[in-house]
Length: 192
Image (cartoon, rainbow, N blue to C red; front, side, top):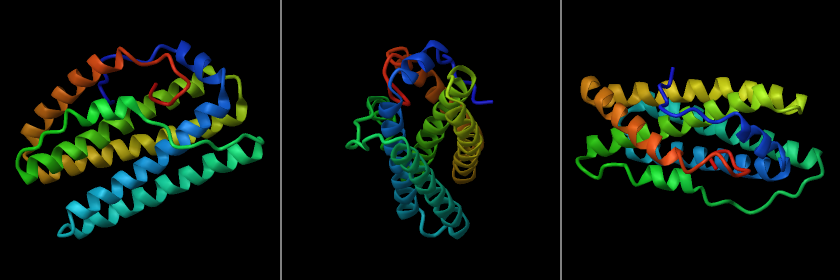
């Protein structure tokens, strides 16, 4: 579905499961950043009422996910740590074009779609490979949500830009992401 060029090695799930407290804290902050990103997109698109409405729903859903992860952290007696730097997301952000307003908005939508695609793929790896039954079910549910967000962001990019150019640019994003993701998959973080 996403056409990611380099799948996550399933052994990453074993790394993640080695420190559930860390992966949950990192995940919670990823959800907070996703909500913030959706809100940032709203500020760029006030003239598109339908898109703003959908972005508001995504922001609220991401905050709900943040809350769900936070509740799991509390229930398990873990300590909710400070926000983590997400090197993967920062590297992706460097690929956003700073051209026309349309190009920038389209690329920000593709940036969001890429993060959702990789997150969905990582959640799938977790559901298929970890032993923790509660988290398996939780990540299966979130996997579906992330796939929906991916579809929404790709759809917005095609709506706001020329669909053919957007498809070409998405292929460029996929190639770029494949290069940087090679350095990841060895940390107890969602994208690490």
